[in-house]
Every structure is written in C-alpha cells, then in structure tokens.
Image 1: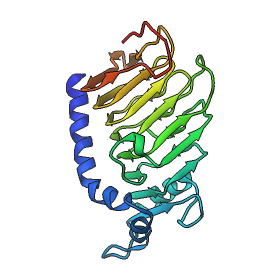
Image 2: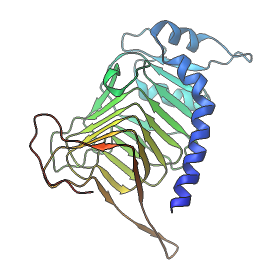
Image 3: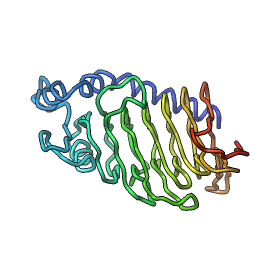
Image 4: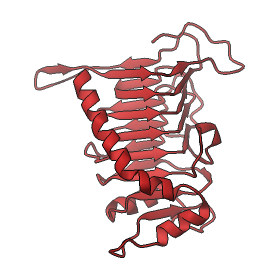
Length: 255
C-alpha cells in the first residue's frame, strides 16, 4: 500500500508541475485573471474561465464554471475574491485547476466556499478524474453539529491536490474519502471528530490539523474488500502539527 500511495503521489506531482504555469498566471489578480481567461492560445482556445461574484467574469458560480471548463478541456478556473455560498460537484474527468488569488498561506486566502452539505461542500461524482488541483481557497461546511457528518471535501477519484487551502467543519469527517489519492499541502484542517474519514489514501504535508472536541480521532480509516481481497486505507502526515484551537479546552485527542 505504501508503494501505491508513493506512486500515485509521483504522478500527482508531475500533474502539478505541468499545470503550474496556468495556475500561477490565473490566480494573481483580477486584471491578470480576466486577461488570461479571454486570451487565446495559439489555437484560439481560452486557457481559463473566470468566476466573480460581481458578474465581471464568465460565471458567478464556481460549480457551473468547473463543469464548463471540463466539458471544453479548459485547464483553469480562476476564482476572484469573495464568498461563494454553494456546493461544488466535480462531474467530469478532465484535468482542471481551481485557484483563488495567490496568497502565501491559507490565512491570506480571499476566496471562501461555504455551504451546509452532508455530501461535502466539494465532492466528486466520478472515480475517473484525471487530476483536480484546488489552490488558495478556503472551504467550510456550515452544518453546526459535532455529531453530524459534514465534509468540507469529499474525495472520490485520483490525482487530487489541495494546496494552501483551509478545510473547516463543525462536524464529523472534514476530509472524507471514497477511494483515490490526495496530496494536501500547506493547509489547515479543522473538524470536530474523525477528521480523516472512510477510505482514505492521503499524504498531508506542511499542514495544521485542529480537532475541536475532546476524545476526537484524527483518522477513522476503513479498509475495503473487492474480489475477495482486502485493501487498507493509508494516511501519511509529514512535517505537520496537531494543535488546539485558541479558546478551546478539549483534550484526549487520538491518532
């Protein structure tokens, strides 16, 4: 299983480098984002779609923009600063980067996606994703119950990268997975209990993990069986920290 996750992460790293030019150009400012979405490549095809709450982009909703980008093989969705009250469901398989304005850390992110969604604020309706990158976006599930399932991100597919994001939930399973491989880097993960839940294959690097109730579990990982063979879930946490949220007195946190 270790060789599987490392192999998957090597492929994901290649994907990220391949997309780095698009994501860097498209997430710098409103001016550059607009120009990148309207500027055509040598074949006359747009390289990005812009989303803005004030209607200055091609779309005002991220979900619709992602669907359009995947349907047209456009590699980037540029999200301008603002709060987007919606759920995002990744339906297609085409590679796409969804990026807010560039920030050096999740605390400086200018894009918030928030919704009360038991299935996940960001979720997948395909297991055949060729690669999804989400960068500089804070994602919050607003379900206000520590005992309810409330994923900020519900993974289903492979080649997923969450970079410089915030995943926040007041409930169970802030990161919930139904198979697939995810790299989470330079990010903030906050949840009540079972922060990494279900069939997880994830590598967490340079991130902060914050459970908010006593006796919480960082991971609640499940194995699965197919064709008479059992497979393990895998969670690797590297160069990261588990911290108590300021103002809370919760204790007895378990890995």
